[in-house]
Image (cartoon, rainbow, N blue to C red; front, side, top):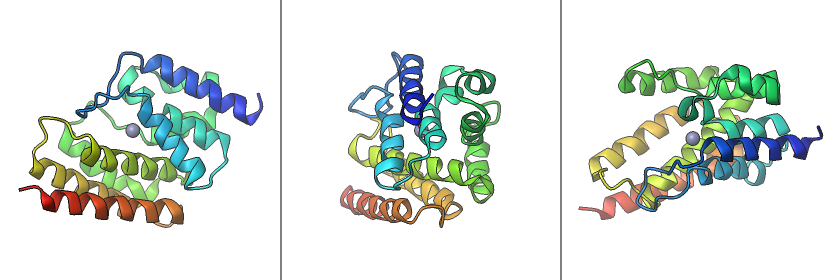
Length: 182
Ligand code: ZN
């Protein structure tokens, strides 16, 4: 398979697996918009053209949210893609607060590819918390989410300057918006 074919195959596979899923936010966007945004940020802001990283970006939530296994990704997309996806997959058998703490602790130890994916993921999620917040998320919960994302990203810094810069801009915008709410 050439590079683009692999990435498109990953997009198709992720779209099929996320069928019927929606983002938590008030816009009720189809879930697949999120992995597409993550891959697009990596390619067009981060200027990364590694097909394994872009494919893994498209697939990054399929193990955590769709019951896909690492073995299935390995078979279809190879070992490197599977390892990136597994690196950014939380262990759902753990309680939520522990999963969130582990993301902060693991961030500095991730591979380059996984760091870039996690960074773009946090950009996409912080944007959504502001542009399309979940209806049951009050201001406090949104403030806490943004602060947690900042803590995770502090362990990812240096992997990609353009994505670091965009994250800082998105957080500044989020904090302005949140300060307006009262
Ligand atoms: Zn995600």
